[in-house]
Image 1: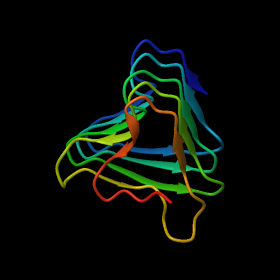
Image 2 (image 1 turned 60 degrees about the vertical axis):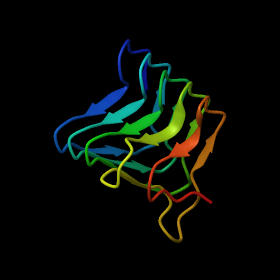
Image 3 (image 1 turned 180 degrees about the horizontal axis):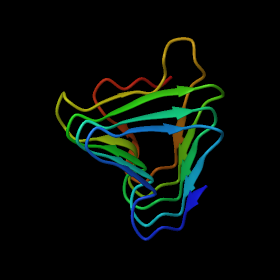
Image 4 (image 1 turned 120 degrees about the vertical axis):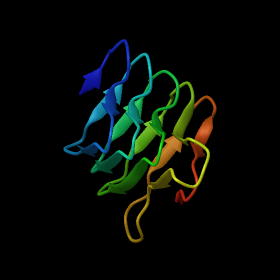
Length: 122
């Protein structure tokens, strides 16, 4: 569990590769639950829960990507900004439901659920 931080829950910088597995919970952080910059990638696997964070729950800047919620689905809910947000422009991307995998669930986020090019939700 990553919870109660005054800043980001998890932050990937300069081509970081982050894997969220074994049912992670990222919640109650003052800033985004997951923030990516500089070509970083996050893979959210199994039942990831990202909730009650400040700003956007998952945000991607500067050629960063959000990939595959694999397994039983993921929940991005009740965050103050977007559930999943990518900096405008074709370089940032989200692929959050590979063909044949269970759907991710994004709901109850203050600004909306997804604002990313290339995103896939059911």
